[in-house]
Length: 232
Image (cartoon, rainbow, N blue to C red):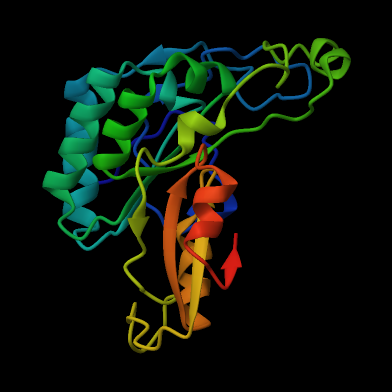
C-alpha cells in the first residue's frame, strides 16, 4: 500500500534515507520573499487520525526505519500536545527509531518554552532545521522574514541542556560495526552546549576524548576548574 503525498514535498539533503510522513501541509508563515517552496499550498494541520494511518502504512513498508523527517514546512508550529502524540506513534511503530527531525522557523522555536523543547527532545525529536538568513534587521525586513533579528535575544538557553552530562563515548558510525564505544580516554574535553550535534561528540570519541557537556550559561571559571585538555 503506497502513501499518497500532497505535493510539492521537500526535505533536507541529509534526510534522503528517512521516512517522511506529512503532519502539516505548507508553511504556517509562507511570506518570505525569497522562498517559493510552499506558495501553491495553504497551510493546514493534518488530523491525528490521518497521521496515525500514514505512520502505520510507512511502518508496514519500512519496519526497520531509524530516522523520520516530519514534513511539511515548520512542523514545529504544531502544539506540543499534538507533536508529542505524533512522536509517541512513531516510537510505537518504529522500534529501531533513533532520530526525528523537522523544519522550523525562528518564530515557532521562540514560541516554545524550554520545558516544551526538552519534552520534545526526550521523545526523540532531536534535530531541527531552521534558517536565520541574516542578523541584519534591514535585510530581514526586506526579505519579509517575519522576525526582527538576534538583537537582545537569548536563544542559546532554548537549545542548551539544563544540567551537565557525560557523553556516552560512542564513535562515528561504521558500516561494519555500527556505533562502537571509545575505550581510550586520552583527553578530557568540556563541550559547551549551544545546541551541540551528537556527531560532533562522536568525532571527539574517535579522537579518544572523554567528553562532558555543560549548559551554555556555565561560567568560564567553573569550566577551567575542571582542568580540561580542551574546550569546545
